[in-house]
Length: 261
Length: 248
Image (cartoon, rainbow over all chains, first blue to last red; front, top):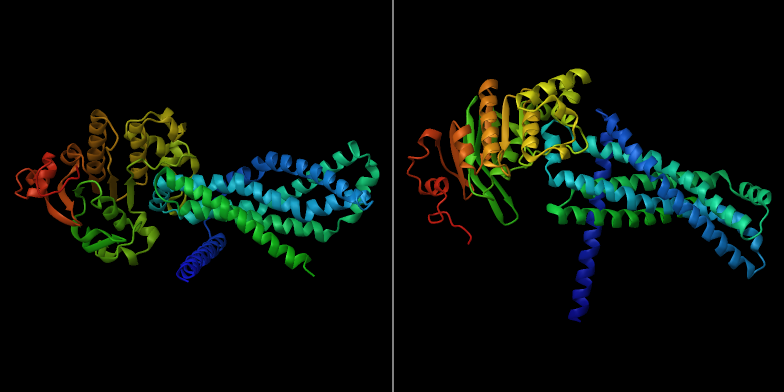
């Protein structure tokens, strides 16, 4: 009985801790949004963030998407054979990539590449007193560090998702036409005919939300970093884990809202 | 004038400041000494609002610093951080001119760069240094750049946090002389925290010793050696034996 009580107490503490963290992140997000609406705006920081979050993430997004699209085509073909439904490969690759795999994989890649980088950079700035220096130079760290990165994530990740969707569908197309014997024109026609504007819009909305989450969590954990190299390491690790989980949770919620009925 | 009255700050069970009372007159160079971990940096950061004291009052020219306009208050300060705290992603001149490129003191880029180069020259660095990144500089050069940044907007009050830590004795002497020259030249109020006695003798008009969360002794630097306080004497002579416990 005592063991059960201890287990429940530990569980309760974990749940309360997680809820408190979520509350702190929500407050931080609110502060970021409120600063977004008020000047000054640091254009140079924003442009640098656009480059870091968007442009420099293109190779990893492209490679992830093309391999996933190709593997998806193979799986659907193999699974479809059991029901003599191999012909649905173009449609399922398109819907799978655009509705789910494109946004989620891009979101997770951004969490791995961008969230970690932001968290490590800001945590190092905190450990080396650069954040304190910003304050003494009359510059609000939220405006200078968080707002440009979060805005860049919100604006560029949907574009990355769009690129990932296209390349993923292309990966499926290449495998299907070169290896599985599909006709090129028919494959493209089936893909285009099957996708709806709602599929594309949902993909972009997911990208915007995931970009916001990935960059916000990187900034949040960087700002809350502990001391020394261990503090920077923990901040980076926690940021990537939290961003990945929140992206997957947000994906479920968004899918439920947009396609649940 | 900066006045601290009964300023206290604890981090969990660790009571770092237990009621600090200290006055720094305008145009005076005050050096706060004390062992490692005695709360010197916390004291300095409390004045700037980087750390919020649990109790007590800090005033600048009679006005409670927590109730003053934050930007106007900070615009009166310059600070040299212990490790330099230069922004890695910005070039040296952009670091120095940071305050001149953002906010109320914003100037055209060319003018800000010109002022930055002039300040770099003032701290003994060549104009070629301006376009380097902080990572390309030695420790002594980073301190000088930090000093140039602290004085770039010609503040009324300058804080120096361990200005000679990590430097060789010759470079320490150079930095100490620079700080003294600049403070006198600008007529600024200066507050330095250090445990380097050569810095104390080079920079200070007055000295305050922080120990066990309170100001143990304060007085003119000229009276420091003859003061009867046993804590002060143990510290300035670096004796292992005395009222200050040392961990062995």
